[in-house]
Length: 103
Image (tube, rainbow, N blue to C red):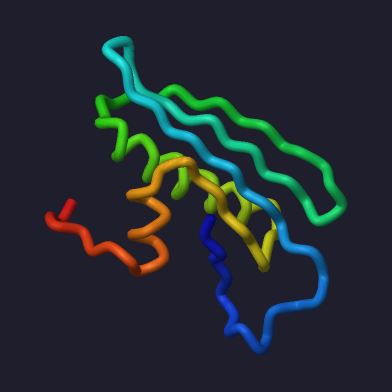
C-alpha cells in the first residue's frame, strides 16, 4: 500500500480519500492493466487496458500505477491511497528501494 498526495501530512483533508487498486500483467500474448478507482462515496470505476507495446511484468505494474494516477487526477481526486500487489513497485514508490537502472 502506498499513499500518494500532493499535500503535506498536516494539510490532508479529513474527508475520505479516493482508493486506487492497480495490477499490471505481462504474458506472451501481451501486457495490460486492471485498474479500480473508488470515490470517497464508495462508487467504483473499473478499467481494463491492453497495452499496445511489449512490457515486462514490472513495467506493466508501473504503467498500471501511472495510468491509474492519471485517471484519478482527471476524475478530480486530490487525496489518493494507491494499492498494488507488486512489492517492488510499492517499496520503490515509498522510497524503501531505489531503482538500479534509469528507464
